[in-house]
Image 1 (cartoon, one colour):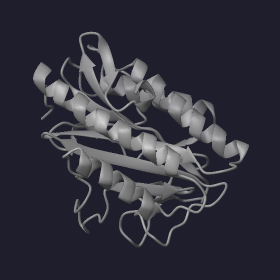
Image 2 (spheres, one colour):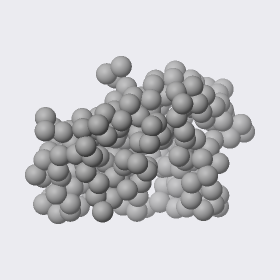
Image 3 (cartoon, helix red, strand yellow):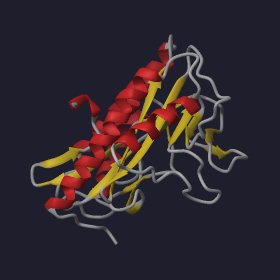
Length: 254
């Protein structure tokens, strides 16, 4: 069932989103050569704790996810597990996917950061994945359908010759981090749930430089590209208001 949030609940979504945005700002500063992904997770956990929030990713799923954020490097698409033994290197790209809960509501966002001197190919992938998000966001209007978002993301990504991950999607969000409806990054316009005022969901293009196909690693969490080419990820929590879509997790506004 798709949840419709009240004005008061949307304000709580904004507060949770602002917390996630604060974390993203600090992670971007910290994502430099020589830093471990565990250190990135420590930063996120500290900020969440200081705000009086919680990290829904900790203990989520089966097997239980052991960290507050996901840290996915280069050909890792999503759900990389932070570790003190995984050290960022010059030329890497690293995706930090952050979920925080505050006062009963969640915010969720992901960014792919450039680590040191990154190749032009990787830079373009990251920039264009962000473009795909904003193409989808344009369609997040009352009266449209989720498929309009999905189609816009797919069309933009494939215009660059990239692969659009199909086995993973965006999702509704609110009192929990994963709710209905699913928000795929591919599909036909005019399909899916009707977009209504008070809805909240995450648009999150996961775009591969090569094939759309992905594999699950032995840790049962980390998803990698099947051809070992890089992947990028860009996500925001979006709430639907009478004035259009609003990103609660957009740190550039802070």
